[in-house]
Amino acid sequence: MSKRYTEQINSFKYKGEPIKITIGTLVVMLLCIILLIVATFCQITIHHPYIPGDFLYFLGQEHTEAEIIRHFIKSYDYIPQIPMIFFIVALLGRKFGITAIVMYIILGMFFPIFALGGGISYLFEYGFGYILAYLPAVFFAGTLLKGKTDYLRIPVIALVGVVTIHLLGILYLLFISTLRQAPWELVSSWIASQSGVQMLYDVFFTIIAIILGKQLRKLLWIVMC
Image 1 (spheres, rainbow, N blue to C red):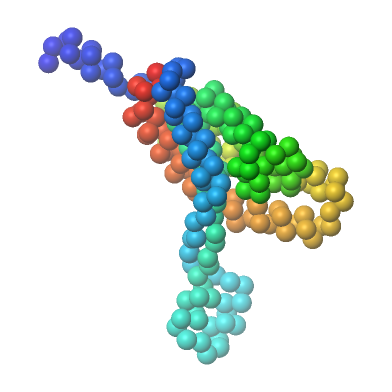
Image 2: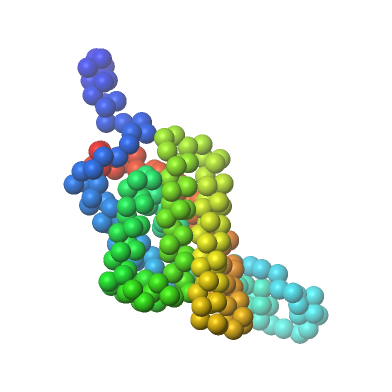
């Protein structure tokens, strides 16, 4: 193969180039916002084995095989919104990833695209802090994902990014609950539902989302550059 053709082929290969503002970039950003809205209202039921606290007592009783299976299999309804956030930043990079999230938040101030609705009043919802926390998490992840990223670092990025969202989300929740003088039982139930087992799933699926986003970036970078 001649040097000319080799150079032409290499020019179409992704080498960690930054994304530029193009029509293609804007279209991909719009699609990412739509995907984020869909993920907000998408619920995945996950079944997995677990060991309950009463397993020794339970096994000592007479139970059918179906009852035993039900007792040791946990079902969890998971919303993949946070992994979608990191998929977007892995695909678009830090600058355009943050832009897409800001556009999503602004849209939510006018349209009911958040989990519990939308509008200016959503600022005082318990869960709004998790949405605001997307911005520092995306900034952090986008910074570490610049250029070539060692795949061994992705779990660390996912862990720190997810913990950032949940930590800031909980602090905002505590702030709003203080303003509302909400009882601790309500606050603790909110924290358990938003940042309990959810965090473990968030980390696991965020790792997958970042890997998928980086691979898709290699395919779409020509459109976005």
